Length: 470
Image: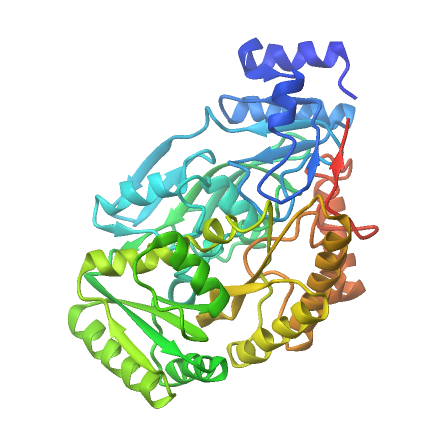
C-alpha cells in the first residue's frame, strides 16, 4: 500500500509533475488492449532516466510495492494490467533514439520509442529493422522486447529476440546491469539478454536496448493466391518451404476474415473463396523475380484457383495494409473482440483451422481465423459481447479447447502475444510442472520480493476476463 510518506519519497525522485494518483489517471492505466480485463493501480509514475528508475525500484523493493512497466498498452494478454495494484511505470520521457551506428549496423534506443518511428529512422539510412508487429504504429520498443513481439515478417527474418543484442536493465533490487554489446560474437557467461526478452517485465525493467540492423532489401513483390480448399492452401505453404524458398511474409486469411477485411478496406479482395495466401518476397530483383515465379507455379500446382501478382508498389502496399487491418476490421462486428494466437507446425495448419471451425460450431460461436501461415502462428478471433455472460463463458471454454488442440498438434499456446494473465492458466500444459518450477526458480532468484509485474505468467487458478476494482 502506498502511504503518504512513500508518495512523497517518489515525488522527490521524479518531481510532482511525473507522479499521478487521481482516479481518472489510475483508470486510464487500469487496462491494456486485452478485452474486458481491468485492474486499478495505486499510482502512475514517469521516470526521466535510468537513475530515477533505479531509485524507484529500490524504494518499491524495500516496501514491497508492485511495479508494472508499461509501453503503449497494446498487448493482448493482460500483461500490463496492474492486478496487484502498485505503480505503473511509464516511459514517456525515456523515448529517445540515441544512436544509429552504420559501421556496426546497430540502433540504440530507450524503451519508450515508438516502433514505426524507429523503423522509419533507420530506413532513411538504407538500413532495415525487420520485426513488424501489427501494432507498430503505436507500440513501443520496450513493450516489443518485454513481449518478444513477432509480426508478418517473422518467417524469413525472425522476431524481436533475434535483433536484441544488448540491454540495460534495472533489477528488482535497484541494481543496474548491462548485457551484450555491439558484437557479432559474445559467449561470456549466461545469455542474460535473451532471458529478459519476452520476460514480460517479471524479472526487471529494461531502460535501454541495442538492436541489430540489416541492409534494406532492394525490392519486393506481393502476390495473392486464392483457394476453394483450405487443405490445398496449407499444402502450398509446406511445399514452398520444402522447395527452399523462404518468403518475407506468407499470410493466411479464411473466408469469414476475408469478407470482413474487404468490407473494411474496400480494395477489391475476392470474397467468394475459402482461403487466401498473401505472399511477399524481398531481396535482389533477380532473386525476387525468380522466387515469385516459382511460388506461383507451386500455388497453381496445389490447386489455387487464381494467382495474382500486384502490378504496382501501391497495389502491393494496399494488400499488405489490408492484412494488417484484420483485427480492426473484425472489431467492427461486435462490442468485444477476443483475438488469440495459437501456433502449430506448418504441416498442421489445415488440421488446426478445421479444428477451430469444429470448436466454433460446438460452442455456437463465430470464429474467424487469419495469421502467419509461414510460421504456423494463427489468430483465431471471436467477435462477441462481454455483456452476454453466458456467451463469454462459451468463448473461454472454446479458446481453452483451441489451446489444447494446438499443443496436441505439436504447437504452443502463444506465438507472439505472450502469457501475461490470460494464458497463465495454460502455461503448464505447454511446459509441464517441471518447466514451470524452473521458471519460478529464476523469478524467485532475481525478484525475491515479487514486485516485478506480479501475478503474470504463473497462475494459481483460471482467470476470467473481469474488472478488478481497487
